[in-house]
Amino acid sequence: MGSGTPVGRVRGLGSAKHGTQHWWQQRLTAGANIFLMAWLMVAVARMPAYDYASVHLWLQSSWAAIPMALLILSVFYHFRLGLQVVIEDYMHGESRVVTMILLNLFTFTLGGIALFAILKVAFSGAPA
Image (cartoon, rainbow, N blue to C red; front, side, top):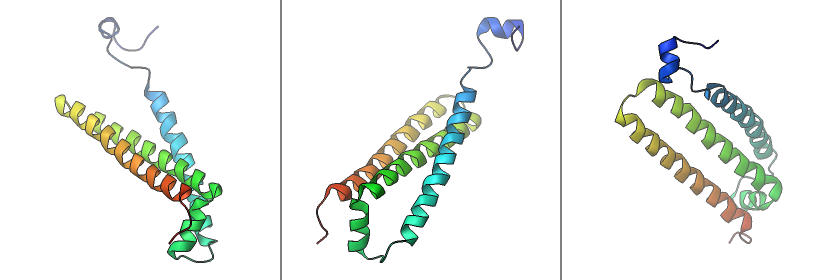
């Protein structure tokens, strides 16, 4: 017993069987984003000062750099998943493929830049 019409099943139309995985990934990244953003707000609120040297020293700690990197990964992946749904629902034809490629390039590039910035601060010496 399948879903859809017999002709649709023969042609391979209908569920691609990936909708629940996408839905779960969005929910998991949303939960991770809430947890990591709460951590970030508490961590920033507990900082003794907000000058460059204090923030630089704070981000050099692995207790700050690792959750920040996880936050960047989670936020950009969640962003990509959400926009993928919008593109798949509202765009049709070849423009959809081009837009998905641009979306992937955009999120990968900006996520990579953000991770590079965190790692550069985490592995650098004391601020000047």
